Image (cartoon, rainbow, N blue to C red; front, side, top):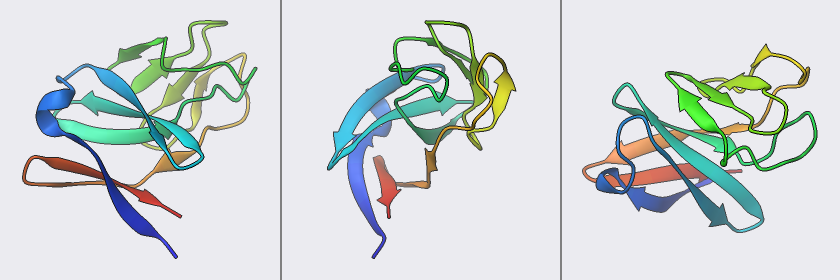
Length: 103
């Protein structure tokens, strides 16, 4: 059954920034872009490297290893060499708290 888990507070992640969290068996990255928060798996689909050491450009995250890019809103690939999307997680903000939905 799906549940929301609190992972951070709004003040933990400045706009344009990102931070990595471990939730059960998932390593995720919370990205803050344009005043909204997004959650993605911390693994590039191209070579399984952590994507959290890359950088955020608006609504794209760029993998530091080979430059693959992904849309943080949907996980879709926006630039090769990756061809497969990455997993995303539903996020909700209540007051100052950021919650991520785990299935």
